Image (tube, rainbow, N blue to C red):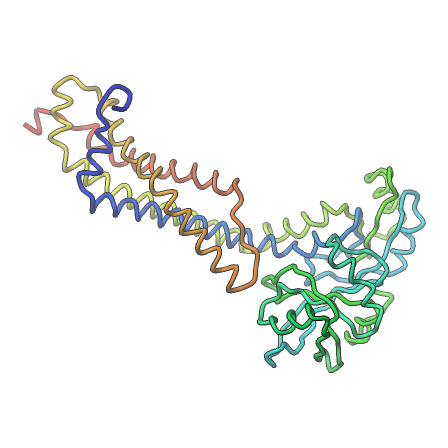
Length: 385
């Protein structure tokens, strides 16, 4: 019994197992499609700022043309030195970036993002990297991203045994002396970390006086906003901006959202998924209403109100949402796992996304129920009998 009455919605769904299964498949397919659209979109956004979050800094000096780590522009190194003289600044150092091709273990060439700074400057939030930075003092030494796209198992196994791996980059010999794990993005297959001296040897036409980013760390107790304002007052806005680390991350993420078609493309796919799901459920429920029109007319003749009759169809739509959603969620989780394994990129399922799609699924099925009840609302017992 439901609210003092028979669960007529459930009984009508279960009475036609084939139709019931088809409706569940429609809901599950829509849920899976929505999860995949949101997963791909956020995977792009998350990987775009993945390196940003790896950097350990309270304030970041960037070029006015900075967009992301693949398009940073450069700043004068003297701006980093000037920041060191501001009250509240404990340390500051330049960070250099470059996209470089290199020969992978299978002989193919790959493209990786190379990050370089002074070996004794703790520029990264990952303690695994910090613990190995002293190894980079030797020119030509690099740390390899174990999450990079490609088959690096032999290299990683060798590093675990204490064996270095030598390869070629930019026509020069380099040696992999350690590992960490970050992952690939749409712009590159992974990340390498080296000293600023090694980068200068590998990256042609790169001047040490023109780093890509300045990392600034504050002394304990220093006011973040006040120090940011003090640094900004002494900089030339034509060549350098100062951002908090949160602003640094949001700048790139915001640029991707507002200046790239990614959000529009995946947002359109999300809407299409919900519309297709609503259409499938509407067709199933409409056919069910049509099939039971005689029963609905009988209920009306017995004195049932439209509200009580429509509650039966809404019960069906909500049951489809409640049963179809977990099927779609499980399918999406399986596909997420396959994508992680195939492209070595982080695609996650946060609880907030589950809650949003859960609500959207119920809204979709409720809309389908509303559309399907149009005929039942207008039924007249005299017309049927």
